[in-house]
Length: 183
Image (cartoon, rainbow, N blue to C red; front, side, top):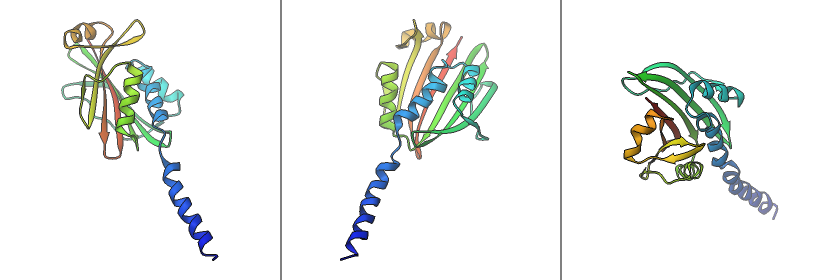
């Protein structure tokens, strides 16, 4: 009869362990917003926000887009909501066009939850979505996110800046990024 007690306790503890280890994707997305969203793609603000929120320097580097001359880049890591987060940010130019990117890889991040969080934060549905990736095109207008259609893109790039937020799956979690293009 004594074997039933410890055996049952082991089963209960094993069943509870995955529930305790589940990441809080809302906290991970909030960490992304602090460094990438609230900074409006401004590299200096991204660096300041990362420092202020305890992100630690890492040696992992992100790749910029082909043809872009990178002026500055950083990579940092932290954790939030039980997930390991790695931040990659850079700014540069392709001719007269200024381009910056702020990307966070969220270990254990769930794509569907990250996409839902992005949609809630932006206030509109993705313009393009597949089972593995969602893309949102927007600009800031009057302190709010404004979805962009194809006819609005050039004006946004010449104004406050065209931004493309992507949420994609990763073998270890999810990646959320904002690319900003400014003419």
